[in-house]
Length: 336
Image 1 (cartoon, rainbow, N blue to C red):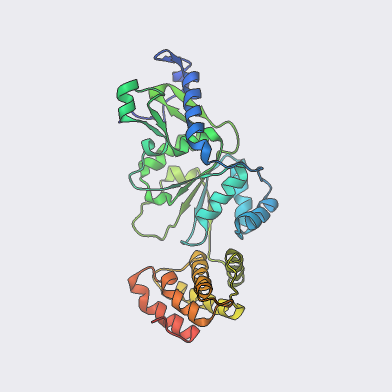
Image 2 (cartoon, helix red, strand yellow):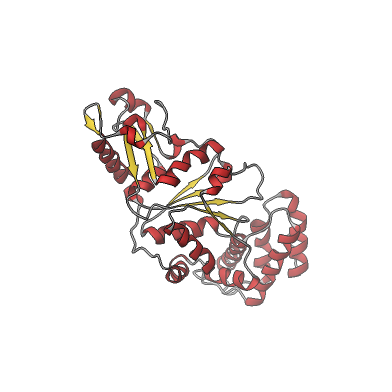
């Protein structure tokens, strides 16, 4: 049930330290903050914050098995120090979401939140709303107010990754502007102002500009973010990514086979409708290793690689023929 609106342009100074049904605004903020800790605090893991770029690159590799270019880490940290949110743009499967979540976690020293975007998102779904039954019983107050992800991240002073921001509406993007500019969230119905109290609360957005079925980002939104471009990695780097991401599977993937797999992937990036990203390559290697494992083998062979190829590489029916042809030509065997 919605009561009024959460007007992000509402003047904070007009709220003051008044009372809502006998409770001061400070008491209301404290009550909702406690509710956030009770609800979301159980999901948070705590670490020592990492805010040095070189150390963060090492931690991303050792703790998260992510090989992240120094450029991306340094630019992200510079944006955070400037209190600017970051927009990761690039093709699917290049690690934007996973890298963003890991960087936010290291920066804050706390688990970050991931918010997958949808076209019907509004402030009630991401900031907070009043529970219908509780509102009937208690009224529209802190008792019936249910805080959501972005408000929880601000109160807990941790990061939030907003995934696929182009799938949201312009109205949703605009409601984020006051949060971005002032690092605060105002709930006028409760006369409550929630302010970020540390540097842990940061936002990373992700976007694949070439994807279909999504909208454009508003000029006002783009002026406030630091845009960082993601690219497909070099063959050498992708080779390293696959090795580290599949290292916990106790089956050997011969170097020459992995090199052939990377040739297939790079050719499909030129010819197929779905361009496989490093995530698809890692999935392919993972499936091949597990096929070998369940067969009782210690080394992946060509058959394991070929049989797992369609599962990992065919995302659109239109690509079936080109995937089968490419795999057959470069690996010398057909999946069918």
